Image 1 (cartoon, protein in one colour):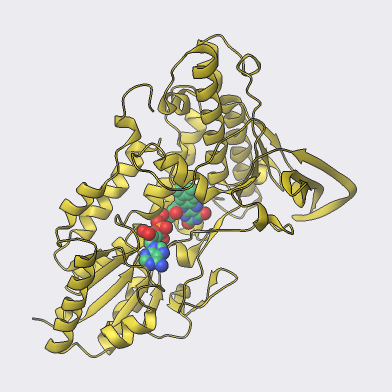
Image 2: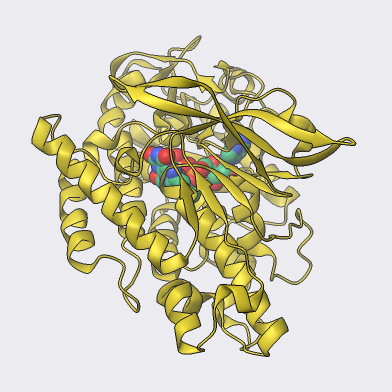
Length: 461
Ligand SMILES: Cc1cc2nc3c(=O)[nH]c(=O)nc-3n(C[C@H](O)[C@H](O)[C@H](O)COP(=O)(O)OP(=O)(O)OC[C@H]3O[C@@H](n4cnc5c(N)ncnc54)[C@H](O)[C@@H]3O)c2cc1C
């Protein structure tokens, strides 16, 4: 066995970032163990990307499969970092040369109003939870959280994902109302692709006749400020173009999905009556030199039984990792090393979060040309799929530029002895056996891939 094969590397999280890091290192001859808390390693692609992105999901999952099926990669499903072992244990008890953290960002950023936690899943729903439910609720034996989307839902946010929340709400409401009131069955894929307005026009019916009150997206800034389009250049022209495209995109969405939009409004206080969530008071703001300034005495109450919080995701607290205020503390070039260790690295969303759009600007420009050309006409595919694809590529380039530091650390760390290698192989096998995984990656993912909504009979999707 050569020098490379005598290093074992642990990667925690097998999705876009983890699989990319594992594959690059495996190709060089290193041996890699990829741990994921779930049976499937697809992270945000399976549980965060709304399930109407069928093509994108399948393509990204196939790419992950191709990387993790590498002969130098061992996959361990059902292993949670911080619960089954800490980083410290992986380094010092298992003896891994390097640990790479690729656990993504799964903690919904909290809306800064007092007492909001009390109403989680009881009036207030977090974006990550809502998409998980939306993507999986059709599966037989689904036992995750159950939600009911209602008229006049409020969505607090303003990014790409908040537009997906709007779509989920409008699609759910209109699909149910068409069926209940008119006996018309339309699947979610048609509603998403055609849009609500075109679907209703086709059936010659209005939202009012259906008894649907649209949802409202409430954003602290203006439509032009929405981060829907990467700023090509920080020049006045670049910024002006980005602002124009964001506004155009939102206008098209408003027309196509028939929701409402309230800009320049910041959540201020929960409205509660008899210990029940009744909505949110918002403070209107001005934007002065890019900063939000409260308009004295200008507030409004948005009364609703459901508010969806969609203001971004942060890394989850994980025992043994320096995650403070839900930020992973890192140091070194590109913030690649995890504080407190010299051989623990962070890649992907756990490290980059919302930032780092820079890398994808070139691609972004191409995508935007398409967005401008196609707008969001009925029947057109959603160009937001391209935006997501762009984010996935951003994550891969984050891995790419950090791999040099990881390799450099490996060249300075001693190779494993044969006993140490046998020990890691044995431990890996034990954990695989614990969940019934026999080491055949492609067979395993095929067995555990959930039934797809698009394959369900008409009337059920
Ligand atoms: C709705 C939505 C919003 C997005 N917003 C952004 C954005 O704002 N910025 C951006 O750059 N990209 C964003 N993206 C793109 C996307 O999230 C990323 O590009 C990509 O999915 C991140 O890949 P990842 O591998 O870092 O994390 P993930 O896809 O989240 O994968 C993390 C993996 O780690 C596993 N894991 C988590 N915790 C543990 C643990 N303790 N132990 C073991 N395994 C664990 C998970 O099961 C999962 O498989 C968004 C995507 C969607 C669908």
